[in-house]
Length: 599
Ligand code: ADP
Image 1 (cartoon, rainbow, N blue to C red):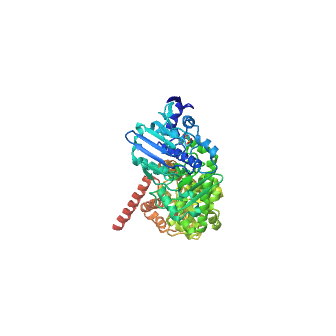
Image 2 (cartoon, rainbow, N blue to C red):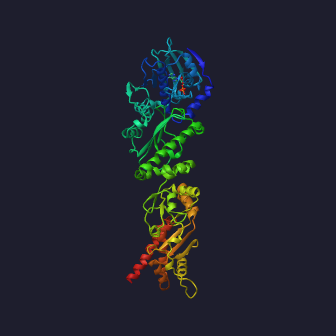
């Protein structure tokens, strides 16, 4: 046995690997099993008929070791020196350049995977015998410092045994169930049989590697269930099968239940030649694709997912553009051929389409026909089609689907309304306005001329030259005594809507946006301009007018009540106090009326 120095300033490298290269300790297993898989792939290429091709995992609780054994290509002493001792000198790249001609791809590219074992081990030993005739076994051992031991090994058969002497913090890897669940996570689809403690682990061919034409619906559902065992079945899926300009296979599923979008991890699993790499694809895929679930398998992605690297990598960008295109095409096809089903699934599709439009300007051009809105005419429509039908170049929308009295007035006057009830719609509307150069107007954002009934206007002047409508407005203004609130009395084309609280569109949007992004407190800084428009054709308003001279106290209370009812009905009460004041006001007026009735 001889003592030797690890090259490439390894004193500095090992702590870096330990701390930074991998965010999760667990992945050492993936790295070592991948190395074993590579070793088997290589030897199968060179000697396809000879020997077995298996990976074995063994725990020794007493010795506190975990061994990963493969019957792969093995290493000569020279190779151990070169590939293991020279950290970051990847044997995989060299091998690929030399031998590989489009056969099974090799997983490792970086030459650091092996050292991830030092995240969990205080000492690592290698016992290896090369496939080359006449080779002798080699033993290598290193405790993670800058020096290692190399000498004669004991292995009798082709292949490599890696023995990890687990460190104190990692003794949990001695638990069988822990390792079993890790194997299930990382190695479910490995190309070679794996055994653990003498028993073989079930592994199968991943469905995404099959040609889409050969896959059945049942298989897709089974695949989904095996990837996401706790989830309800998906709605539909997109099978990706890309060969050019890079290799990518995968299946993306639209999940069933409507989830809050939080860039959740684990939704899209990333594989590299059947080996699970990560369930964090945030760096690779745009946010809006993360709404989907599934698996992507690409040999063009390096196993060592270094974030900064992935972000700038050109092929990664192309990859996501391609995936987006495929998913969009699938949705367009669904919309064209199965419109009913598309609409039925809209609550699940919506977030994808809307986030996509907001996050990727190019996506909009491709996806605009996918963006549907439910309309007050009981149809689903695009904004473009809505504008074709509309009398003026303006889009009326409501952020609530309830058929409120205000909604009814629009309906009676044949003004079509689009429902925009999801949180993301504020941002989307803003985007569409600038894209289409058309204003969007919430139905309570203005008292639209179309809602007025000119024939019943109260234009008669009294002795002081005021119209009847102005008199009502003056009385209500005095009763409410709110300086910031503009008050008008108008002849609305409705006998059932007593008043509208009109809230300035732009300021309200800003307020709602702040509330959505920064919480309710933040919205207090923005108070949208509001006007209170009472309907002179409504009996309650007419009663207030009549009572204003006979019983000004009761009329004043009724005016306040009218205001509170409107702001409550339009969900425009300003904070809890305002709401509570409204309730108190209703109670007070009921008391007054009752006492009058009983007196
Ligand atoms: P990578 O796999 O990214 O190339 P590693 O640090 O994991 O980097 O491994 C370095 C090299 O060591 C590999 O490329 C391979 O040549 C060799 N090696 C590692 N593990 C094995 C093994 N089980 N059998 C044969 N060779 C191996």
